[in-house]
Length: 125
Image (cartoon, rainbow, N blue to C red):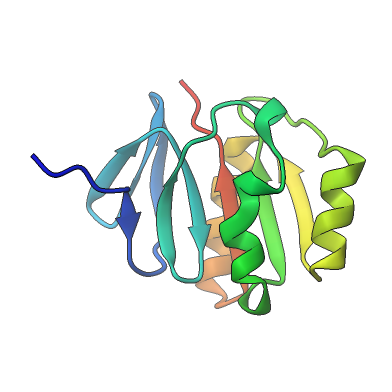
């Protein structure tokens, strides 16, 4: 059996969230996801306390194609630590932390407007 890192190559709206995962592009993923211009990736982060530079490496790699990063922090809004905010600011990326549900809805709207948006979304039950 071959195990691969979860990846959907391309941009797609998110159809549903909850029960520990997400549905998009007629697929589902259990766990958190990272939506960037190159695709939707499984994201091995389950708690906002784990947000660090390494967790967002793919976002920084694709920063030239990202204006806004929506950060879904779970059921509740949790602010980003100042050090993280500074890293994104230095990379030229505006960040907007919010609950995962709000981030999913906002991501879909901005994606439909063809905006340079990315999302880092913690899964919720």
